[in-house]
Amino acid sequence: MDLIVIIGRGAVGKMTVGQELMKITDFRLFHNHMMIEPVIEVFGRFQADVIAKLREDVIDEFLKTEYQGMIFTIMWAFDMQSDWDYVKSITDKFEATGGTVYYVELVADRAVRIERNKTENRLRNKASKRDIAVSEDRMIREETKYRLVSNEGEIPFEHYIKIDNTNLEPDVVARMIKEHFDLPGKSKTELLKRVKLEPVRDEELQMMYEMQIESFMPLYEKYHDDGSPAIESFERVKARALRPNRKYFFIVMDGARVGAVNLGHNDPDEKKVSFISPIFILPRYQNRGIGYAAIQKSFAMFPDVKCWKLETILQEKLNCHLYEKCGFVRVGEEKPVNDAMTLIDYELNL
Image (cartoon, rainbow, N blue to C red):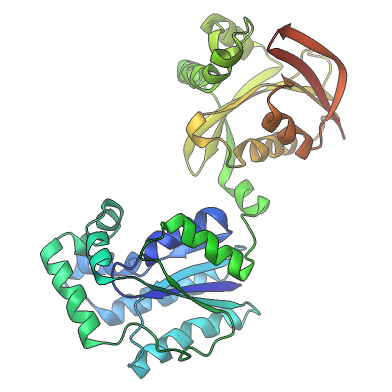
């Protein structure tokens, strides 16, 4: 398993860059304060030995997972041998698995870091920083007491990069790191583990219906088609849900309902042909690969189905690309709806 160590002075952006890097890779973020804050909350003060023990337990358990790796953040005092030893104790665990350790050092001007010390994201994740005056004074004291920026050539590791992120947004820095080390993007396996299909109960149909309207309304405003699910009546949705051979499922990612899909057969006696109609993802969750994961979950849920069918809009190239990536192929004739919109059929035979 691989490890990315993000190094830097206080408020340089280690956690925030790690958050952005986690979005575009199969690495999970374990930032410095994830153990610091609970310990301070319980003990009322910083307890280094307890924090170190908790970190070690988390890392040991994480090494048993199937993720590509971990993003670990630390403020490294380069003039303290104990810090070199501590980092080595962590990196040794990952290298023992055959993994690679990548080192990213962030540097930024003090004035910028003082402003970053006040950001909402930082204060939300780090309760001990919420007294801004104390936090700022502590930050300045730490960087005058310890040498928190490496000297030229001091870090001997093969996979190392120093980035001045004074004027760079966190997502830009994350992409720089990913490209510099040629890190793999999010794996399909990781996404599939996060996405589930949960049956929609009768009392939840109204909620699902409102999600359907929100999801399809942008397409309706674009094409103004009379058959759009955005203007479908609740009675029709309810009637579809009551059919014994069809079923609505919420698409759930990380515990949040992000969309829904209806699966089933038009013919109650036909169990080997199934339709995906409709499937939708709420706009704020689109373009994250969730639709792909939901379709794969659908296949797994109905292993006896040998032919899957669906219908989509020819002009929506991203939707067509999604279905083709899932293995669907176009069949039949194009079906013009109006001057702007044409429907096409897709099938997947297993």
